[in-house]
Length: 127
Image 1 (cartoon, rainbow, N blue to C red):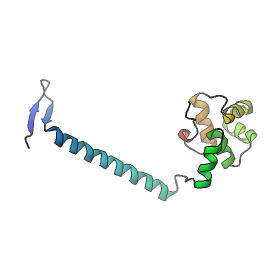
Image 2 (cartoon, rainbow, N blue to C red):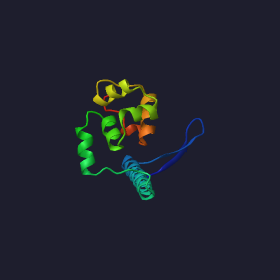
Image 3 (spheres, rainbow, N blue to C red):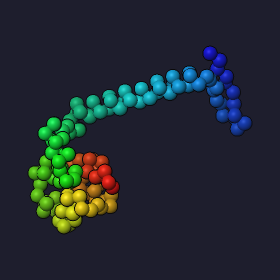
Image 4 (cartoon, rainbow, N blue to C red):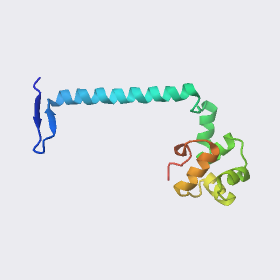
């Protein structure tokens, strides 16, 4: 395998190598990143930082009109309690729960914080 070490006109050191070797190194780097992500996830699970949903929860999430409706029910909160804890009006919560409307990201952030979940778990796919 031929590897050429050289410099760009601006003086930056670069390496030129066969494409097949570049692809092998790229795949190796991706595998390393994937392994680190798995380790990080396992660390969070071991520490109890992440909440796992069982099959019944997943079925309920799929059946719910919105992620917000699922998480509010899972937390055992009333609309009034969630409205109070998130400073989001009850009428807006009802609209969001039924999937009849969306809100700006700041609203979802407040709701996620009140529900103790990541905002990504709350925002419907259509937002």
